[in-house]
Image 1 (cartoon, one colour):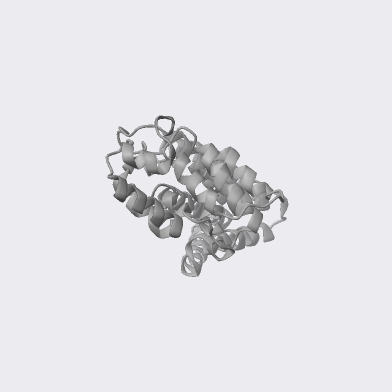
Image 2 (image 1 turned 135 degrees about the vertical axis):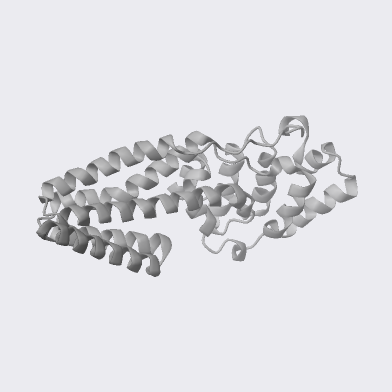
Length: 274
């Protein structure tokens, strides 16, 4: 049985419950047996798990991936190849949105337009940017053909491996390696049974995530422009956007964004005075 050292960011009663929730969410796929094997190794508890554990089971790994990536659940790295790139794209989208809304607001302020006009432009950028982001989301890569037997056609992960053509000693060795160390045992399982690898998120899921990312990047600035009186509204927008960019892309990117905003404001002011 795995000890608590394998789950440093999860409570003792959360780890097994989370593995069971993931197994339920993957019902009908080979990953159901994968999570059942891991859940059987984790220490059970009679205490109720946290709400985040139930939330993961309800909405799926994609929408909770940042938390799942940090939670320390054994074997969760199985999802990294399909979830991490999608979330990186979402972070890039939120970063671009925060930069655009700050630059546009600074440009309009430099032209001497009223704060209400700046706020109106920010809300338009939020709305039409979200629609454009959802519309321009590229197609998801096609999933590989799954010719492996389903979990109902075999019993346990060992039976699944045997059904895919593994020899009994090799299948037993793979399952034993998973039980000993799920984080290092799952890559060999993928080589033996490629159907265990989660499929990439659908286009609708990716479009929804990117749209939420765009809204999260523009909503703080649009709200601040609407509620903070001039001229402090623009200052609050620049600070909020720079803080968000620093969180998503690092301090250097935040400094570049703040400098770009100041430059655009200066250019707008110069044009306005000419």
